[in-house]
Image: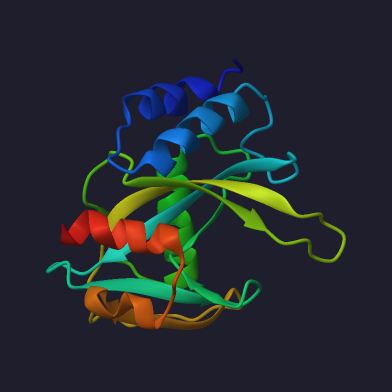
Amino acid sequence: MSSPLPSLYPTLQAYTSRFTEELTFREQFFSLLTHPRAFHRDHLPGHITGSAWIVDSDTRFVLLTHHAKLNKWLQPGGHADGNPDVQQVALREAWEETGLKSLQLRTPAIFDIDIHTIPARKDFPEHLHFDVRFLVEADRHEPLVITHESNDLQWVALDRLADYTTQRSLARMREKLCT
């Protein structure tokens, strides 16, 4: 293992989930983490990303971004770009994509993990994002800043999430909060 890996590797070892797909993902993460460039976006066939499942203080709403490149509703997040501190990556990406200053981790623990395919684009081939997700809270009344990365930002009632997306990984995160 290379030097930046120890911080994520034991965190993933301690991570448990009642969702079998996440346990399978965890094993694939372990394999990826043996590569010294796992935290760099040029590492193929996939690399580590960090994202934030941003909820309001009452846990009734989640903040979604309509991703400009992927044309779908997602949680804010992005590439680690060499930073092995995925918690920091998730918070940085959440701030960059929303402009929210009130972002706070609800817990330092991993909230969810996912592996998903990103389609080929221009001169970069199809690849995988190994996404580490954290539960983050923000003030729902704070102004949002839509950047070039998003077509829109919306606070979505958790009970209306299916109106915005049918993606299993987002439904799974909702289930974690609502059951």
